[in-house]
Length: 467
Image 1 (cartoon, rainbow, N blue to C red):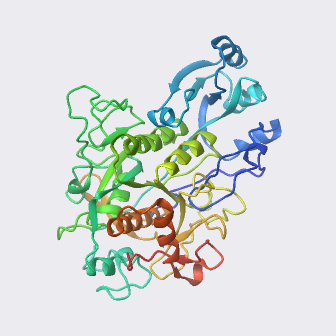
Image 2: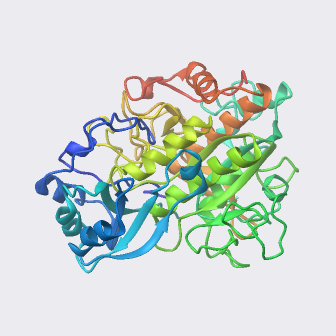
Image 3: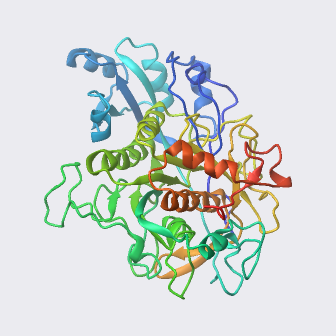
């Protein structure tokens, strides 16, 4: 079993820099107006229980700052520019500055303290590390194993499932015209249950040239931001990597082929945005992944309705918040896991201690808790009356894994793709819907559930039967 698919960092002190942040479930945000830097004691609290890349910070310089002024600011921490991050989405939204990833010989928190209050800097933050963890297996609809897809009137039946089976019975099985991004590990795009629903980029044929001008050469099925290449599956024939991303993809959109498992959508288009590698993923790469989808929608008008984010850790990131806000302007929902509690494996209250990215207070964020097949809140699942939106199947969830395998996992990581699948299913039957309309449909159709009463905004569980 998986005990910690999403272990978010915790801090006992609310930073001044976070004063405008309102928590939500599985990541919510609103643009911060107060960008004062935290005190040194608050800076220390930032790192408490939160993983970050050692000796790295993300710096947002103010517009128009001269090269000499930048150099002088970085000299305070003996900093060297490691990467300038200026995505096409940033440029589209008028940001010509982007982010600067800086390497410093100092510890990250010490460097933050040294840069506090610098006139040249809009904000500076750690390059947080986001993670998941997984284990266990067993091979689905007809034999009773896919309870998360069942409904009251399906056979087999389970009232606590997503009711996807009832949606299918009405003819709503999804649409290839609906696109979702999976920001996670990579996806085994050749998996027999996934291959038909994995995106192939029609704008950039494999020829060693960036034909569509998005900055990524031959991004056939998406992009590996961790490895900085176009190969989004690194599990090989042994399936040694990318289980988690492949599992998430199966819940959203495994095909109905009479074999293996089936997803909430039989028809959908899934893009792989791999940013979680062997050592987790960083804020810098998460920003790039979110912006990749925003740019695709800008550039090609693709019907991208959501990203799935079954990951967490670290603290509040203004850089990530801004990226999700850009996605919001393009009507892309950010569906995020509420988190799996701390090291004790017991779910925590996100209203009391924020779990990111699901606690970002943005209108396009949907934070997801996990429930069991008996309707109980999964013991590991975080919750929050004001910061977690809805519950969905998250315990003993069978889905695709690498290489051509199937496994059963537990986690809010597993609940989240049920909701993303629901988003895609609604978008298929209600083309042209805004992100707000889709989110409202997800929330208003939730079935009241005793275990979730007072534990999430909707007080209920996912129900896609009316979609």
